[in-house]
Image 1 (tube, helix red, strand yellow):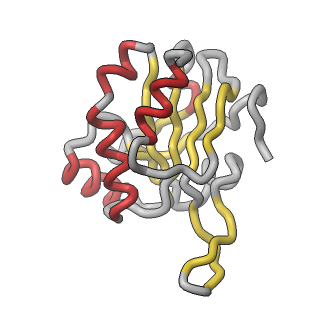
Image 2 (cartoon, rainbow, N blue to C red):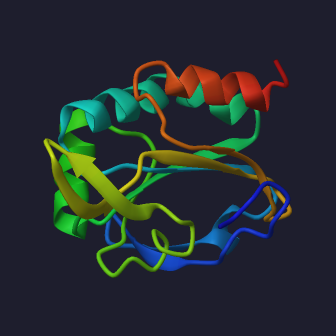
Image 3 (cartoon, helix red, strand yellow):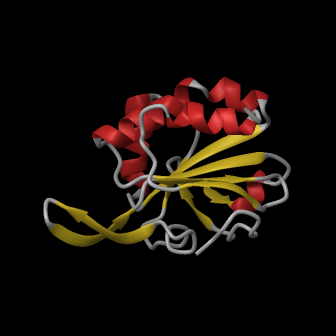
Length: 153
């Protein structure tokens, strides 16, 4: 299980635009890497819209945002276009990011247990170390919570 202060696991996957994205692409700036269960579901829409609406505030803090789910590049692209997102969504169909970050877990829903993606967020510093981890995120208002942490509030 990762903890604050650990080196963030490296990754390289395709984004919603079909371009390869790696952790190294974000060196020198803060990265808000958030994991969500499935594109185009209500909670995921709230969370993505929150980050989209506050992108200028994050950029003012020298921070980038990237969302991750196990959806395909095509599904991520449709989701991004539908919401007019201004940050990449990473398609991790093989769990190359999701598992090393501990975001794939047994979940319970309506009395059924299954493997799913936990809604969680990592703040990775410019040096590649994990600065903060949010587990069990509530989508509404989460972007403001993350921005406040970046600002030291």
